[in-house]
Length: 173
Image (cartoon, rainbow, N blue to C red):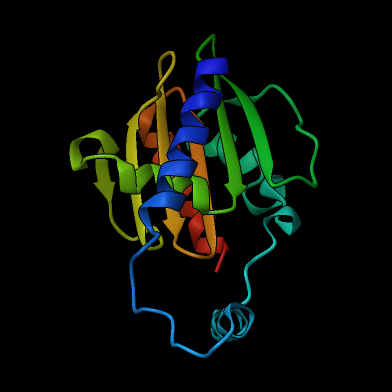
């Protein structure tokens, strides 16, 4: 777990430092505060992902139907993430939907090669990929709307994880 946290921190720092020195030079005679205020005013307001309620965006019953099984838990609602546990022909499968600020995901994607990102999915915000989970079995879908929101769906099987991601994206505009 410590390694994963270190990796994520490194990716965020890499993303933050890789953008320094790019773009037009600052105009002379203009204070940094004025320039920052101008950029802030031009940028669209950032979404507060903590207001998203994943279990309400994609309900546990909908996930059970997508997976083709019976819901085993009623996850607590009201959070930007939701965990779904479903029984499928005597086995247990789990899926998780999480909404987040986009910076960690965009930094990670920018640092990865096309092959490392996994299979590109179309129609899911600005960019989306499905790949085998980094740890353990299963799959992870990452979808990003740069500067606005990111979403991660993980689960035991690829097709249901992608279907859950597609449903969530269709409901979060």
